[in-house]
Length: 255
Image (cartoon, rainbow, N blue to C red):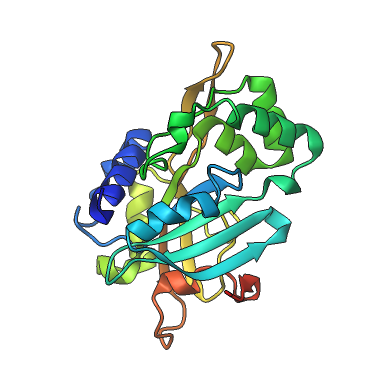
């Protein structure tokens, strides 16, 4: 598999979950994506150490790393060779969970078949372990919403980020279009997968909750991702907007 095929599989899996995003026509279908935000966890088969060989095969290299202790997250920003979307891979640190929710999540993850841990497309396959029951989901959600999301959705593409500059419109113009299309956006920099830097103007649009089946046959609505629109708040910066996306004080030094 080549990088273009990998990105296409991520996108196809994403719009299968969020068909209303796939149906948006506010910008050309071939408009460039600024970044793809993925959520995973630091389990031995799904952490960055396990994912990097495949991502490196596609040409991705870690450019920045951000630690967010208050969220129990380690976020790696990976650049492709040349142009194309960056990857923002948020890795939930399971050790930050309390004992019971951590045991619940580990029990689920350990039930994934060995075949789910092989191949370069493991981030495109959906949840590789059994779905939890609703009570376990609620326990995980109370401990950490992203732990609950991982339990029902698996390591996956969470949202797609577009730079308004490449869509030939301002953030406010696109925001009005998104509202007319039925998306309720928020400029809360702490809503979504990770906190957003003040150097970036930002709107996040949840795609709406999906009705998901749980282990006992019951169905409940769960929000699983969305779309982000971003633009530089200060045009003097030469970096791509994705490089300014996360708060500077969270950046770690790469060895």
